[in-house]
Structure formats: C-alpha cells, structure tokens
Image (cartoon, rainbow, N blue to C red; front, side, top):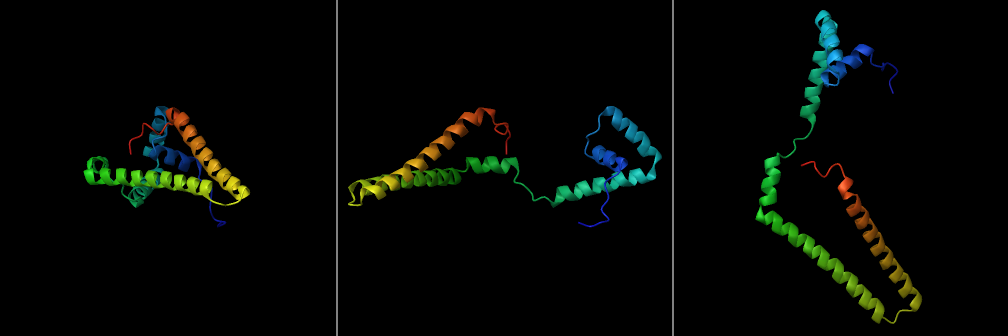
Length: 148
C-alpha cells in the first residue's frame, strides 16, 4: 500500500453519506447549511457525484426487464430449455440404471461391487440432502421476491 493514503475526514464522510442519501433529515439540513457556506465542501460534493456517475456508467449494461420477459415467452427458448433438461435427466437416470444393471450382472468381485455401490449411494444421498435443504429453506429465502 502507498504511504500517502489518508483516512477520510469527518467532512468527507458526511459528504459521501450526503451524496449516497444516507443522512436523516436533521443531518441533511445541517450539512446543507454548511454546504451553502463553504466552497470547498461544495466542490467535494460535486466531485463525489461525478465519481458516482462514472461508477454507474462503468458497470456493464443489464438486459431490460422487457427483454427477459420476451425471452421467457419465446417458444424456441422455452422448448430448447425444456428439451435440454429432459435430455439431461433421461441421460442421468439411464446411465445410473445401466451402471446398476452392469454392476449387478458383472462377474466382478464382491468388494469392488460394494465400493461402487457405496459411491453411487453416497452421491444419491448427498443430492437428496441438498435438494431437501434447498426446498426447506426456500420459504425463508429473501431473494425469491426479487425480480431479475
């Protein structure tokens, strides 16, 4: 770190809070009285507002809500998503079934069969535990009401 970095002064912190809209009415009124009397403080506020605009424009643009809704209504998008998930589910279930059948009918020794079975059972139990935890905590998730 550079040695010439200074902690912000009380006035700079108040200016930041003012620009961010974090002051209550009384604090804002006091700050605005001081702001009208001091040129250096007005310059500080103008500089902070410029920095805020710069930061806002530096962020990548997000798709507008109407674009998300249009994409949700698009039959090609909905169909390909549905087919993709269906293919994934059928493939995973089919592969698991084929693996279990191959394991059952193979001439492999008992110990590797038990170890492979334990591996598959462990993966299934972890998946089910994660799914159960997600479904049980879903009603308490504060982000479910946020549309984006």
